[in-house]
Image (cartoon, rainbow, N blue to C red; front, side, top):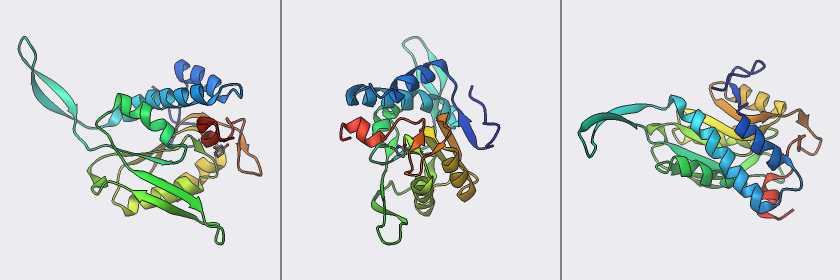
Length: 215
Ligand code: URA
């Protein structure tokens, strides 16, 4: 089971060999967009398996072909919210292991004049308080979009909020946990730093461009 990071109480960094193996391929600049998309979905699916460990379950009676037995089913309405565009690449893998989850969408861009992040798309289920909400974006860079996204999810009613990313920069984790100290952040890698252009190093480049072949 992954442990909290020593530098950040609310950060969990995954060291599972299968996740680290796939991270080595997704970081590789020689990996093309088709493989990149597959790896992104697979890593997200593997991460969600651990992230959901504390989700509530309720007992149910189930009739097997042999007898009635007691089993357990997820008892909350789970919502996954990708930040467009690259968060979309994590959805397929998450829905593969958790097909009952609902999917909300947030598109966030920086306003040219104020430089503040603004939502150009906000389509969320109405009762976000009904269960855990997983915000997904492969890259947690400056933390600006993620922090705004979490504020929007809170305004929409979300109570139990978690963020899943593949690569996080220390600057982004610091900003996010300063703005939202109760959120749990899960990452497959806490990288070294941000460049002055806002790229994570060593990182994996522009996740949206690499997954859609638009670079
Ligand atoms: N977004 C990306 O896609 N890559 C980075 O390195 C930082 C932000």
